[in-house]
Length: 303
Image (cartoon, rainbow, N blue to C red):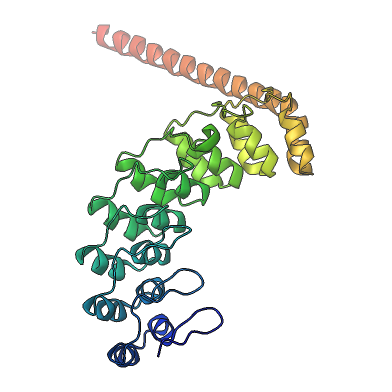
């Protein structure tokens, strides 16, 4: 009953993965090992949670499955796998059954944030998940959300106290992560929350702009430049924004950087024109008000 496949999938593991509750119960009654692990290190409970089979999860727990069992390499648990898949009902069942909400190399909150499962993120935060928990590389739920472009998740995490300028390995902030990945909406959101645009990394003085240039994300580059990112910044190895873009063969970004001084001059001229026009309109309105007041005074003085 415990004979595995080449990938160490036992009959019970396969039944759990497929959500076949009656079959799983039969195998357990005939002596199937409820803690058997496959080549990924997953137990039947982990497989059931990963696939979102709540009834199977309930069965395995009722038969004594270890709710907090972890894989050897990544310390994944049934709960982290359920959260990665976005299975809110399964996560809720596991937590109410005693699953550790902070267990795992990446916590359940990190897994849900990385995959953009907004409702699950809210649930975990309300259940007391630590928004400041870090991985070995100092990543947090917020850095994962921003790196993967989940702006709505990032917003909720900040509402629960996540640190906007948190530095992961090498000193990279959530804004830097979003810029390197090219997530324009997330970059716009973080800037609106006053994320530091010209902050540098610890290892090579990368900035959000240099990372966007290296990634070839022209829309992000244009946004950062418009928000006063420093286009003349040099990295520790003397690389420039132009060099970072050129190394990756990003023609559009190179063109944008080369044209930027001219574009900036045009924008400044347009801004000056608009300011002068606004001043003219204000002066005209003031003059009209004065003339109207004088007319009213004249009319009031007439017998």
